[in-house]
Length: 83
Image (cartoon, rainbow, N blue to C red):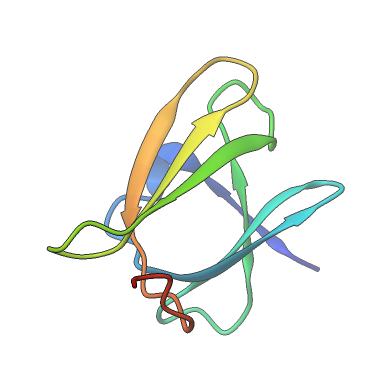
């Protein structure tokens, strides 16, 4: 069973990868043996996801599709999208 994680309890996470599922957004997180399902404070699990690759470090930005709650995580993707 996938563990749910509240967006309010997600501070300090480093995301290694992510995947959209029918039930929401799964995050592979450093230090966690299994992926976690990110849940918003409004109770929803559907997110708009943006990967950013600035020169100072990769970021994963998620915004709740329902209420607009936004969170930014350091993102250590296994595949680099930088030129």
